[in-house]
Length: 311
Image 1: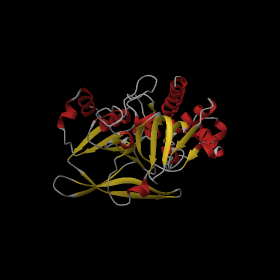
Image 2: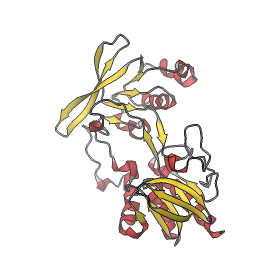
Image 3: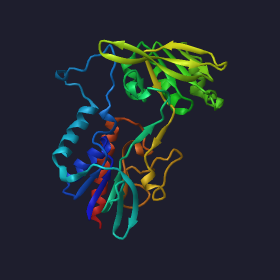
Image 4: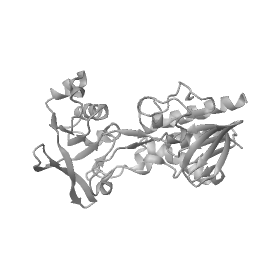
């Protein structure tokens, strides 16, 4: 039986694993990959890769250091996904998607979230190449540029607010299924902004392409207006902010979750069931950022360590 199994190999999971190893715990990280979303880095036609000699602080660089340590310690990881976590005598049983049962005294869930996609042809070809899924993370790359936000709810509203402070123009493309969203104080403020425009009841039909020396990028959208007419609009970037789905299926029914399906944790990253901890975007903690997930992973590991000392 392991002391601790960490589910998920993104920034939170990797950090938790390294901290647990340094506490001499018998730990196993279970994940289909190492690095999570940091494996997908944004490409922008007019920005070259950062010069490493400038010593810029990068979330990706920090995560890579933890990943390198886990890649070296191959006994501490199992490259597969988890199907279910079951409460058992003395701890938990973690069932992998290939049918293996792993016994552990404690669990850290660090499985992150998935972004809702546009659902149009060739979308995956342009992911992180003109088509992005987090304005909070990548918006600063597009200062004084023309951008679009596709989405209806609070996520799109917040993304628009973030982008409106730096972009030349922000075009919001939505079905507006909940008109009341724009009646909120932030919605009213954005509608009154000179650099924000709202296209109601428009559908995204296709992603338009721009070919440069650096390769192919998304550089606009083909839209269908309420009358079914097609129009082409050019943007420097498109941010898809439709919804986020927390990857919590494996602990459904075991721990308390919020209205968005994220695991509710306290200040020490403890979930509602003793012995289960959670860190990163999969929780209801504030801020979906790499460096925040790194800190949450460290806290979860230390919290799990203290819990295991009492057993």
